[in-house]
Image 1 (cartoon, helix red, strand yellow):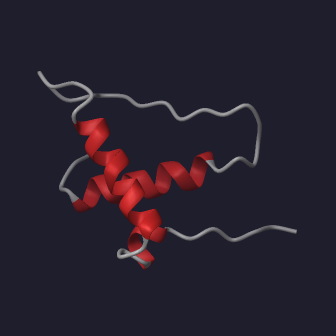
Image 2 (tube, one colour):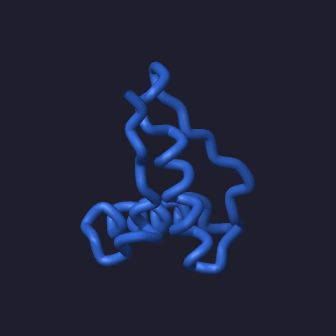
Length: 68
């Protein structure tokens, strides 16, 4: 059975999970003080562990802050 996952940052911006993605966004932004990161890699040990949903929600959080 396929489980549909939401872009929680977009659909429920006030939720604690969305806030966690915004915290991740802030930590990514401060990871390299003297410039900006060009590449991020999201990995896991196996399939179906939420990489795509995590990447999509992180992308929405970055876009909301005006980042690419």
